[in-house]
Length: 116
Image (cartoon, rainbow, N blue to C red; front, side):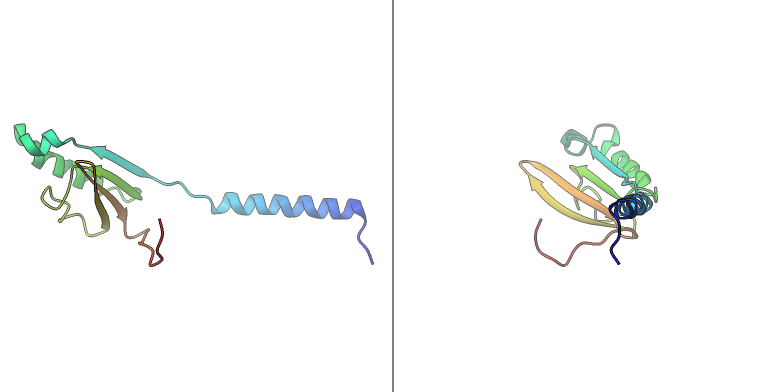
């Protein structure tokens, strides 16, 4: 038997509603942190700025809700080598700035696939 036009329309709307509900149920918040401590903090180190910046960053990374952190001017010298164990990192230099993308390894992992 063939389905009437009104029956197909109702079925299509129900399916669309179910899909919308499914997409809503699968949605999630992404929590990010961005911090540029500025080069002067590390180069000049007035008032022990370097140690304080490292301590503040480590404290912020204790928040289990944060997914990613983009930090500027931190590097191995400036204590990214001793990140909390639940954090991974990708680093590069952009112009003169040292840039690191930190990711919560309990939620994310780097892809083995190439590309950007």
